[in-house]
Length: 280
Image (cartoon, rainbow, N blue to C red; front, side, top):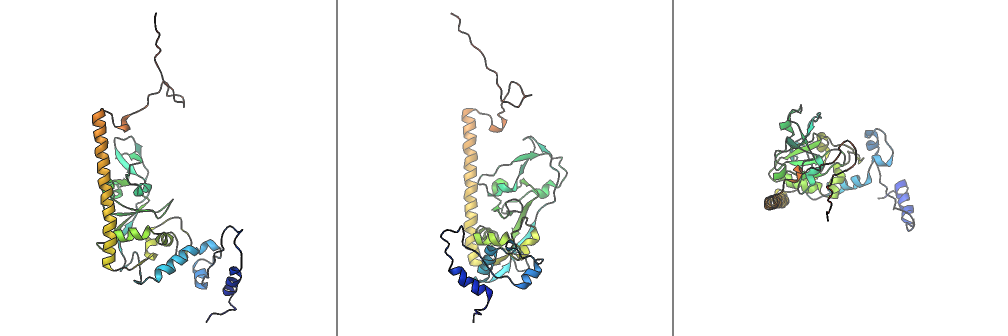
């Protein structure tokens, strides 16, 4: 039975009578338990309890398959890690291609810079493998991708979360979940719904995901992997087309084309040109 003396109930009645025609946004509100406030360092500001994330968690919790924690004993993630920071030695294109986390969502990913083999870090541990699940952990957090042929054995920045699925069909299923708005809201918030600015591997231990049957995960995973296989095929055809173009037109690779200026000591583009005189 609803307690009509409850302040939240009374506010709901008043809120229903408000005309929002000339107001910018409809007012959002929710109830917060006292235990959540105590566990959240007694924070009372609204952004400490994100409404969207709370609604998303409630929606997932009520799904017909039940939920499990993403990285747990019965979860779907086998390993999750990123690498320590290191000092980078940037060089020209003759050495090691270096990728930024943002490129994991690119259809045709390309290295942003190149680093020296003398860089003092474990370069092998920075490499990712085909089929690995990748996630951005800072800046624009929560972007997710799967490593295809283009990214196999390539070196990425330290601040990229590398995940492996526990089961045969878990990778594509997890990827699909975090492509949804609901999955993103849950991923980008803490236990109390507040938006976080950085994802640590341990954060995945508190992320809930529907405990779907194996048959459903298999269907989703195979569709996701099929899309990445088609992407690999597309990239191979692009590479082949560029190779034919350069060969037929006898062009240098675009990376080798350098602009020659008349005077490099000034910050202006300047050129030389020949003067021709017509003699009568």
